[in-house]
Image 1: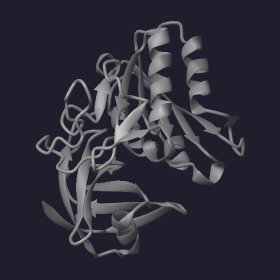
Image 2: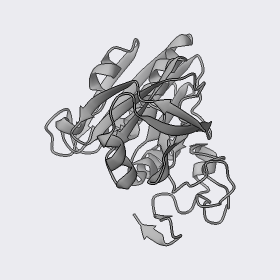
Image 3: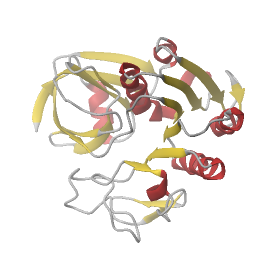
Length: 265
């Protein structure tokens, strides 16, 4: 555990801020850290930025820990451990289709920047949100080479009116050679399940970042274990490939809270 100073804070929208730390984290896109505020709580957060010298966490304000974090200022310290978990594929000769829902755009923004160091990479980046005011990283994604941005909003205030998965199916349908395609997704689980279903239908590679309640981050407590399979999502996930995602019977149906009670989606 490192106690790191907050070096920069950016306001992304009324409910989301990105907190930056000058620290060599050496993470891969899709991994997460555990953030601890003494006397409050410890929670996992996806890594939104990591350039080798500085990393950033894009955080949605929800609950006691994030409420306290949003009160903090530059120079305040928090406990950080990690990185933990599995990551998205980063490789050359790929056509990435990135499907982000809400603050699920955080790890995919990191991924889209990292894959640019590889040859023959193109990206279709799909962002979905309830309205245009809640969109994340629109300007950031526009600056990434060989990337086409697609936007969907529930209320039609920007881009396609409807679900971001509508855009995904349209794009996949038009691609003749699907062997180089890899679909990666992070966001609400019902959206992720629809993404998985579409990838199964068109037989394209898919990687899904699955969120579960995590306490330790290292597979000891078992809090984030998946029913039937018994694997912990902090070590065998959060990013899983299509074959494994298809075996997770609870995906898109329910998850468990900190007491272990089933919460239907």
